[in-house]
Image 1 (spheres, rainbow, N blue to C red):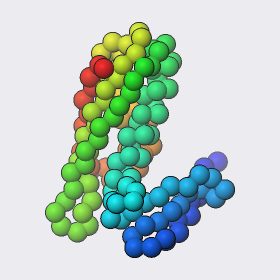
Image 2: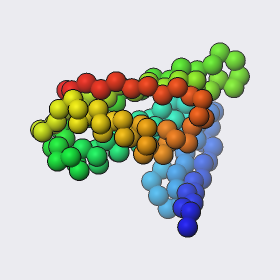
Image 3: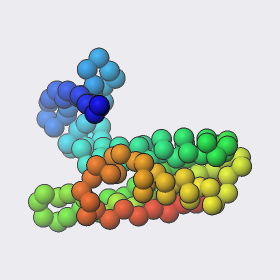
Length: 135
């Protein structure tokens, strides 16, 4: 059976909105990127947090005691409308006990290439690249 996610978004003022799952926590989105991240930044954060969650779980299975995980993500956008992303690049900075570059790279590649549902929900022509460094 397919899972169905539901969300509701309410306009506040200007280009500010608040939304979330029914009876769940709420998030703010600001089209002006002043009071909260805007929609395009929120998409980058969604992709990074989805992949980050995968990496945490994969490294746990590898028996790594995670100490640090920081993901910097950049998105290149088209000049013309719609100004969608054409490329995403993730820089993973990972530290932990029992971690080596091979394990870190394997965890990230599994996330980006196989498991991250947000990345795989994006248009297939978006170039997705990544780099891994030990912190």
